[in-house]
Image: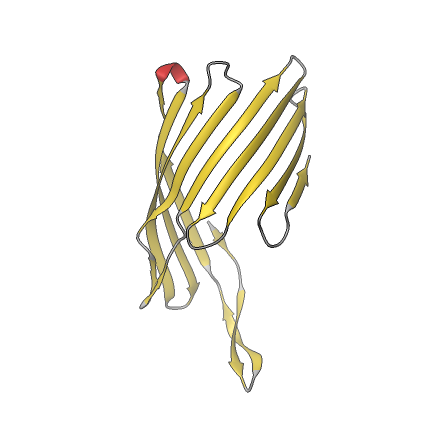
Length: 167
């Protein structure tokens, strides 16, 4: 759930002029269930999401979206492959205008190794938004004594901020 205040504006005489303010409101809920199969090596998870948004007085909409995904862990248990199809459903209607939520295809491969005091996770992911560009990401996380984690990631084929670092 989120809310805030937004300045409403319109173009008048070639200039952007403030015409008032609005208090948009977003509400999001999700229900997901995971089913482990093959002695825990495979997991399948369907999900249903509900999203409602009010962007201005008389300008609101809602939609229901569906996801399905799965994970396969290799017998060595340190390599995983995941695939997910997300955001399939009906478009959100704002009055007479339809707003489509971009369906997403995600594929990830990750490698995990650990010792008594530290662990290392490295992942490569592919994300394709059907109404937008696709990107590939490379990420890693090094955790020390389950207290301190260093994270870094880089996205290829994107416009904007590609490098992300965190601790």
